[in-house]
Amino acid sequence: MRILVTGGAGFIGSHLTRRLLADGHEVSVVDNESTGRRENVPAAVRYTRADVTRPDELEPVFAGGFDAVCHLAGQVSIIRSFSDPVADLRTNVEGTVNVLRMCLKYKLPRLVYASSMTVYGDTRKIPTPETEPACPDSYYGITKFAAERYVHSTAERPDLGFNFNVTSLRMYSVFGPIQAIDNPYQGVLGIFLGHLLQNEPITIYGDGEQTRDFVYIDDIVDGWARTLDNTATFGGVFNLGSGRSRSINQLAEHAMAAFGRSRANYEIIRAPARPGEQRSVRADISRAKAVIGWEPKTDFATGLDETVRWARSASASCSSKGGRS
Image (cartoon, rainbow, N blue to C red; front, side, top):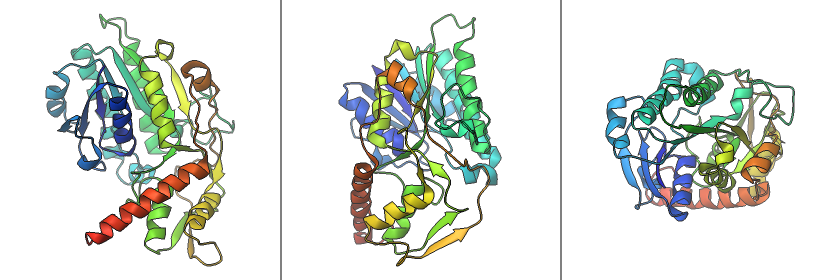
């Protein structure tokens, strides 16, 4: 297939791009490099620096023609969604609408959308199935759900004149190599590792007993790859998580232990809880198992070891160049 990956220079997008290439697909990438990095993209990929909020930049890319679009481009920080809600809205909703308009204009038959666990909000049903009502608490979650609805409502329009098949994958807390370790707005594990590498204090917001479902990057891209040409997923929404949960306090302990540290000998700063944070998070992945034939294979300890190994290497490489990773 000829596949376009939006946000393909980012953490998840670049891993997905490599998987699609390995599967024999022809891959193109667009990314505005706000958080993604050009060096993350394999040389075999056709790369364009472009912003999904700019239709004039997307037009030449889509004009080349594709069989499918994996739409991962987006603003991914809950905190930034509160500090700059307009930018969050533009990137996640308007950007998605722009991608959809291009899909319709060029009659692209397939789109897979990167949705989020945040669409559920602070739900009481744990583990959470896809049938649970979406009631996001954060501005970020609101934009991800709005974009998801644009995707599915567009596919259901009776006036398209062609079959437009879409799927949304509600991803949980993805971690692994290439995850940012120098960005305070992205990925709690990456943030912890970045501070540990620099011997800086770890900050835990709230009581730290809020839970998250951490799922390894290789398992996530396997879910995407299995979804692309699976007709049973058309029109569907699926959770991609580990089906297990850990508290932020536990995550900090695991991260510190990987560096030979503990609560007794490492500084932890306690800060007030932040807005929009879900209290309890755990995915019900039974639908993904049944329909996609997918389930995570990497246990947390193995994934953490791989991530720490990469983070140490990335940090050492950056230090040798005179800067922080």
